[in-house]
Image (tube, rainbow, N blue to C red; front, side):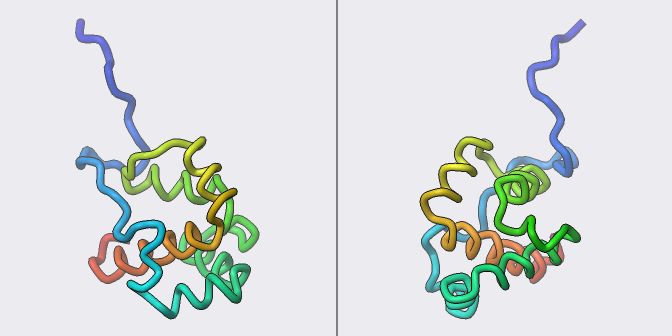
Length: 109
């Protein structure tokens, strides 16, 4: 009998792990999202939640980022998600929205 050495991941579908489409601090890659995240973070948070068919209040949460990471096989941890959201909330929010938009363009969302 072979021991289980890796756990299955939700949404991974057997594919290899991917990574974020843009970096946390790549604001210049989409100025519109950057401006929205800077001046209207609650609005951007609701857009993200809507994209993911979740409650509007969940968009800027650790749970939402972790769910998204898990769904697309993006490496990381809940601890890292928490620290990033505490230290760089707008940057992380913008990164998540940019990633959603890029995956939509690739028909992978």
